[in-house]
Image (tube, rainbow, N blue to C red):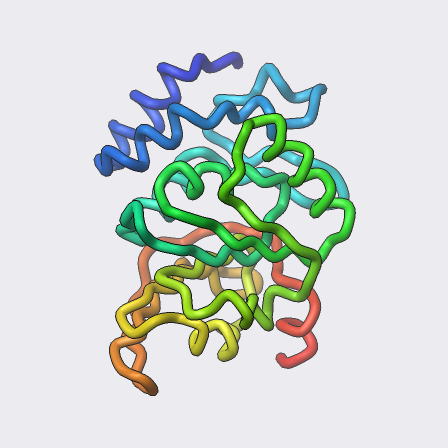
Length: 211
């Protein structure tokens, strides 16, 4: 069923609790069709994850908006994204914050994301090929970190790339996944709480080797 962008905004975002004005503006500004494969363009604004190849997906609009809202982002902040994918989530975040650093472990997706972000005219996203478990130490510390793939547990290197007061949002688990928010309260003290059940592709690489 074809869904118009206006319907997505009303039915799948506002009516489901997305109220942050910056998030809603970003979801409106970013053209999701630029990040969706050609044969799925008619499903661009459906509230569902869509396959982009090699068992990878573009996240459903509600989850992208929900995660951005949960992070309570500010315009001056710098964010690390672990799992660039096709670039859509980074594109949305880029409309809210100062800069997004995004790490992707799959080489062809790094190229796909670069093309998509360029088509969308987005210039405040830096991407690179690498294992997201290790983060992006040279650009740390970050105001916020968001994972778009699920590790068995939150990677410790990422926790220590947060500023004091920084937030990390991650889907965690294997078969049953939960979205967790972790806040770095002090140098070696973190507060953690569970938000909602989610379903993401598993985080690969070091995250799997460690557990």
